[in-house]
Length: 600
Image (cartoon, rainbow, N blue to C red; front, top):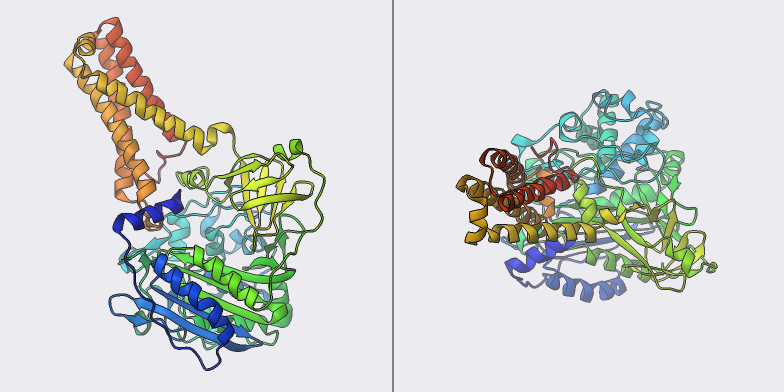
């Protein structure tokens, strides 16, 4: 539903088509790859309103393809260049943070089993003392992924990394450390702060002098705000045809947001593919790339900082990055000595998967792999896995719980012992393990103890009450009952039963505020870009919450008015029903933590 919000918003503004402007192709250009990518890119850029896109590919430590399409800025017409156009790298920052941590490990300044609170004193009491550096590097620290207050619109509201960890996030714990993989930007922010406390330098300064300068990544920067010389080369970020006008400065640079060109990204990739490099020793590099955790031996897992992808029996490392108006991906295929980087200034995720598939197929990486013969699973056995699941990623102790509601994944069976997901049908290959040969990355799904694991993502099975269907019924039921009660006041017979005008006004006020607040909340979640929350909770969202609280207070006043005014039995019953519905709605919304300290 959150993804649909972006689509609805684009259509509400109207679609503006543009023609992609071809970029310069390097002398070393894989013409066969260009022929494969060109028609797909140009078509998708038009249909998805992508302004500009860059692709660079390296094979055997040599760039074999580099090209930019479209424009970095629609107003100026500045074309995309793989050498000079800077993209907001978002979570791609995490692999640089992990690299910095591995450097400290080499220097014996830290140990992987050290608790993070040893180095980041400001989070003592907020983070389980059992959370180690190893846990955070593999996203097994059990911490929630915070989506709110992670960025600033301008330098005036920008937080330091220390301030963000103390004031900007609550560091909610979802699971004990080491139990499961739960993607968390807050965890990587903790590692970045550790780099600061161990080295005595800011995170940006350390990475600049120990990684970027060493690799001659002259365009790339972690500095917030970005240095003036590079600002003119940063892509304008777009939501459909509408540009984002803020600066987008992140409060948590170690988790995102690096500014990087395609050429610099490939320089970094080359270092990770070359065992003899100036950044990490071969033994450290091997340790970093090793699979350290997975949900099942046959499933892809996580290295230190990198995610893992296994396609056609080929193991690859990759990391995505997303910020409002930009998506990037860096992929390393060590066995093939292949690396590629894709970036574009749009929120549309679909083109990224298609381009990844095309590039891998071009270099003969694909086909089946990772699972074999089907197991003997009866329809009854498969049926126990059916139900609604919600990702562990989002906190259940704050209003960000609602992100989980929007991310619900429904699991069904086909009556033949197979599992059906939105991605397709999965066939049993073992106890709780199902396989889909048609899926590129998420070709295995695993069920255990009312939990589901899809790749490196973990989900918990929901009770019927928690599902979006039941929650939707409650919402619709509340709106219908309240509107019927409100319309009832238009009938003289009901007004005569209530008698006192003050009670009538209290009833109408409580009902109007409740309906207005819920409609406002729903409209915000459906029509407003969810990425707005990275700058903090929008003021209009708080208004809806305050209206709900005011409606509840009016309901309490109404209850007092009933006791004082003593209307007729039917009038009292009407008023009591109004109180029950409005106060009940408040308790229901409180289960989504809308009355938490973050919002009021």
